Image (cartoon, rainbow, N blue to C red):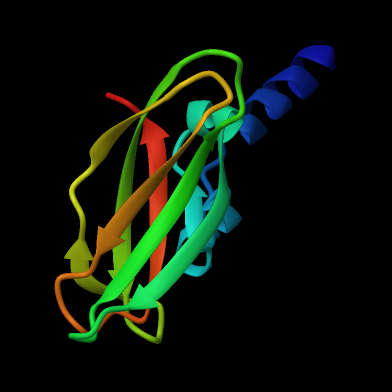
Length: 132
């Protein structure tokens, strides 16, 4: 009898599920759509934060973003930063800056400034990841 139960449990574990499923950690992916500053990997999440974000509209209508990136650790860090410019609805305008390397000293802060390439940008997301 015990063998029958063990076999039934084993076969139940092999069953395949069909149908639509919510993605795992779906909240993680929606954050990038709504947040202005996101950390892209666990290392950045542990070590980096921001001390402020400022925006300005330039005379030609383009958006300028300045981010003060802060090292939370007592060691030197090398990260990469990028800015994705978005329209009023939060959709990318196709204007993404290239990833640039930023070296942060122990508990230090650095300001990084980005400018959109066109006047369609209304909002943005600054993205930070560990240097590759």
